Length: 483
Ligand code: ADP
Ligand code: GLC
Image (cartoon, rainbow, N blue to C red; front, side, top):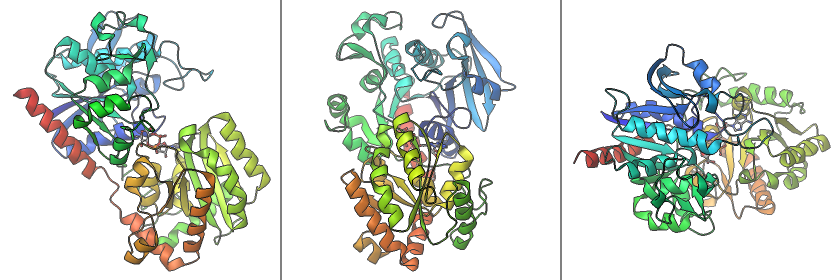
């Protein structure tokens, strides 16, 4: 069996701020079915250590960036884990990246360098009997790992760097170089240097044997100056090892036929059973209970990436056309406030819950008719995959993974009976408005709407297909490491 060490800063259900955790949490089980054994190395945040009842310390380190650390091996939630128990770095409540004041933890450079250093040690035989073939680093938090492997001169494990979001790159002062355990020569364009700083993601992209990102379209976008966020030159130079592998979702967690968070379970043959969910949703958001109104939903981090700014200008027309709108999310206070004031202006048809609520996210998927994702950029996106599985038609910006996962119900697609949602471009309010007019036109044809719902629900959004692609990639690298 190919042995993979996944290095990742969040993992569902132990700790989650976004889709990265969902991917890290679901991929290992799918890979097991493909002959790949994954162990995941995660920081020992309080919620992680709490879940690791029965874990055993398999190694200890005297000084991991200013304090002692234990490496705890355990199984939890079906995952094989190594957690870094280092209280001076991770024993803090709340968000893994930011303190209660909303600012990044001041020692993030060390907190995540520690993650990479421990992965190097594990790759180099720290724990007896464990030697991974491949180290899989996820996002900037694990970006130093491929660089450390390189400078340590290790041929095994080989490394994969996956970009989940190029907007987060992890840049720190060059003066930290030695303290981070990197040689002087690393502070160079062909090293970890990035515009005068130490770039963690840059380091991973420079040295990983393979680079993946989470959709083929995003893999192309990030090689352009418009989408490359400063790293497009490097990504073009490494295009021969860069590929896009779409995400899936955990179809056991997201299953409308058995979902405990729904008012009524349903499937593609019992679509009328969606109605109690719509009613429950309207009630939860204090909207008028009207099954005829086309109910749009949003579940999102409220950040610039997600295009929440496009929504307030279209809501008056959406309501005037007989629609309703509910949103769940938190993040940027200005975006939260803009949606709140839209709800205050139209309380019977627009509702907002500011916060993070896993159960409500499920009810929205099961109760809304259409799910809006007006993202300015979207590496893959998972909420549109959940929406399809729940028969909520996604209305998406034509970017990144949204292009690759949703089939626009244009005239030809409708004729061919293959649409699963609606696209709009460019990503601006008036084009979203134009898409909404198309959505309303289809809504007025219940047979066509139902057809699209069934298409969406029949789409294979699980992890089997993507897991096969990762397995092939790992096996190729493992073979190379043995040769
Ligand atoms: P990203 O990782 O960029 O935030 P994704 O679409 O990949 O976007 O993943 C988002 C994940 O987080 C999904 O599982 C979605 O349901 C969940 N999510 C986002 N915001 C909330 C929220 N406010 N409450 C509950 N779940 C949320
Ligand atoms: C990032 C991206 C999102 C992707 C997720 C998991 O958070 O913003 O598009 O689905 O990672 O790969």
